[in-house]
Amino acid sequence: MRLTLYIWRQNNAYDKGRMEKHQVNDVLEDMSFLEMLDVLNEKLILEGKEPVAFDHDCREGICGACSLTINGIPHGHEKATTTCQLHMRKFKDGDSIYIEPFRAKAFPVIKDLIVDRTAFDRIMQAGGFISINTGNAPEANGLPVSKKNADLSMDAAACIGCGACVAACPNGAAMLFVSAKVSQFALLPQGQPERKKRVLAMVNQMEKEGFGACTNFYECEAACPKQISVRFIAMMNRDYLCSRVTEPVEV
Image (cartoon, rainbow, N blue to C red; front, side, top):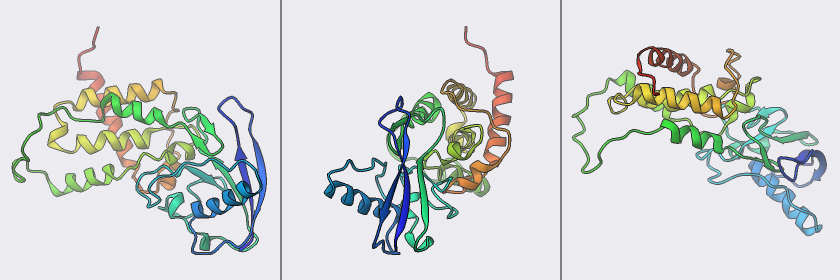
C-alpha cells in the first residue's frame, strides 16, 4: 500500500505547529497504525530527519497511551478500537490520512502528536481511590454485591483514561472519564464511606483543570474505545447534586 500522510508537527505547547506531508510505501495491511508510523520514522531517521514523536506503551489496547486523532476522529474511524489496534487493512491503497494530537485546552501539546494528560492524574488523585485498611484478603461473600451493580461497576472500570472522550467533545469535557471513575466506586460497598466527598473532589478538580461542560452531544460515548456509556454521567450528576446539598461545607 502507498499512503500519503499529513502529520501535525509541533515542538512544544508554545510553538505554532504545522502539517507535514509524507509519502509511505510498502505498507502491509497486517500492520497496526503505530507500526506504520514506525516505518515512517525509520525512513525519516535514514534521511537524517527528526522522527515524529507519538505516545504508546502496551500496543494491546489496554493502556490508552496511543492518543491520536486520525482523519478528525480520536483513535480513528473503527468503533471500539484504540489507535494501536487499528490495522492498515482498514485503509485503501492511495489513501490520504490526516494525523493530529488530541485537541483540548486541558491537553497541551508536548511535542508533535504527544499531549500532556496529567490533568487526568490530578483528578484521580483528588478522589479516585478508597481509604481502607489492607491486609489479608476478605471473605468473598463478606460484602454481597448485586450482579447488576457488579456488572455496572466493571463497565465503568473498563475506562482506560485515554482522553478520546475529551478530544471528541466539542466542549472539551471530561465528564465521561470522571463519571466512570466515580461510578466504579459508587456502585460498590467499598466506595460508600467516601462517596459524597469523592464526587465533590473529583468534579471540582475537573473544573480546575479547565475541562469544558457537558451539553449532551454524546460524541464521548461514540469515540470511547471501551464503549463507556453516558449513563454514568447521569449517575455522577445525581450524586454530585445530592452531595452538594448534604455534605458539610468546609470552611
